[in-house]
Amino acid sequence: MVSTEHKIEDSNTRVTQRSVWYKIKRLCQRYPLGAIGSFIVFIVVFAAVFADVVAPYDPTQTNAKMSLSAPSAAMLFGGDMMGRDVLSRIIHGARISLAVGIGSTVLGGLLGTIIGLMCGYFLGWFDLIIQRIIDMMQALPLLVMALVMAASLGPSLENTIIAISIPLVPQVARVIRSNVLSLREMPFVEAARSVGMSNGRIAFRHILPNTLAPLIVLGTAQLGSAILTEASLSFLGLGVPEPYPSWGRMLSESAAEYVRVAPWLVIFPGIAISAAVFGANLMGDAVRDYLDPRNQG
Amino acid sequence: MSAYVIQRVLLMFLTLLGMSVIIFVLLRLVPGNIVDIMFDSAGFVDPSEKATIEKELGLDLPIYQQYFDWISALLVGDLGFSFVSEMPAIDEIGPRIPITAKLAALSLFFSILFGLPLGVISAVRQNTTLDYVLRVISLSGLSLPSFWLALLILMACVSYMGAIPIYTETPETLWDELLLYLLPSAAVGFRASALIMRLTRSSMLEVMRQDYIRTAMSKGATENAINYKHALRNAVLPVTTIIGIEAAFLIGGLIITETVFNIPGVAHFLVEAILMRDYPIVQSLVMFIAIIVVVINFLTDLAYAILDPRIRYS
Image (cartoon, rainbow over all chains, first blue to last red; front, top):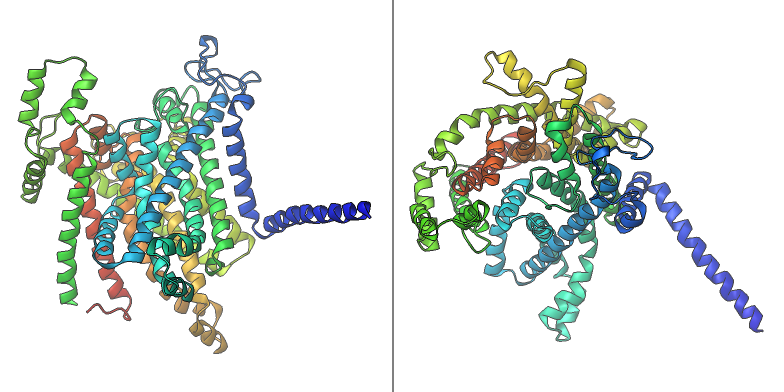
């Protein structure tokens, strides 16, 4: 008796296991570009998490002998002006890019969601004023606003995250607000109200979970531009400061003087930025197609 | 229509007034003022000297007074004095405007030239290999950092021509000027063209699902007539909006590209001013960018009404 039960359990788990892989396979077949994007993002995440294990050298260790050395077996991507291993710096740079990219997307998403929820739920003068402020914030290019904020906050990892997250807020607030506007007229909200639920509870228990899909779509779309903005800020010298190896700063350090003698200092960090942003964008596109059927085509 | 225009112009002034407050506040987010920052980087300086400079710059006044002084000067076209060059800001910014304007115009020209036709092709050949290739190219346009693209272009120039077309002095002939602006504007235009292409594609696909397209098909209209006479005309409307927004937002891409190519434009100047902590200039420049964006948005809305006879603002 007992052994039969075990058998049934066993085959059940095998079915669920197979179906997970099957699902992933199906998704990959349906969204081949999204699968490529997710794979690239996975590699970047892997490099960031296991940077200490994966990187062949310490990213801050200088070595005068290897200064500006061309790519070789010892240093696959070559060495920079201080003889630091470019590959190790790129692997560790993934941490900064992801920390800033994910950090600012989440922070911007959180702030935008709270503002959007409040606007869509309370409406009235509060909504009117916030909407006008959002209009104004959207009239400045992302980079200009991040630049001004980064300059006024001063260079640090936390400040870079804040400087990039604030310009992302208006878009999130807009999307959440318009979503809440249509949700608040739904019967289930009316039902919740009629049983005497408080406004706050309705907003967080009933409306918020239903705005999750557009939030995820927007978040994955913003991740790429957040990574790109960090690279741009660091390139201009207003991003994450030393000793963190940042892809953008690796480019700016090498750009002016070494473009002729050591092109690998320009090529590899640039590929790292482009690949990470490209992967995030591909993944974002696929997530949008998956979660928002209206956009399919 | 005229009532709408008046209303919009009034709203535009209100928006700009609000933006001036936002910009003013953004630059004062952190406690301490410009003089503190200047002195921090300079090391130890006599405190009495600090007080003198603060007084000279009007930083000892209450914050609303400072804002009022700035905005009232701005209204009569006085952008203040640069800390660094001690010249009136308007004299610093003025000569740089045409340079950035030409670059932006050329970038926009490139982006429309490539973005619009490729977007149409991608939509008409939906889900073919060509469509996939074009989509990947456009997505990579959004992913490549413009400064890296600019650097790659510079590297290619060095290895193939042995020289870099770098901005050294004011170009003399129109041809020289065009040659100088060609590469930077291509680097910036690539990104904008990717955006335009993506929007053209999705807009075309949206229109091609409409009933009147099916009607045209059932009437036996040729594929070209349907695609270009019926679909494109309607699909291009939302694209005008993105072109308008892009025209204003190109300045974001130009910030980096002007820096890499060392072109003395407005965007490069903004970065220099920020790095030098020249806050009067930063404040006025960002306000200047805001004015351009708001005005272009307004013009785009008007263009929309002219292009689409169904839209009547009243």
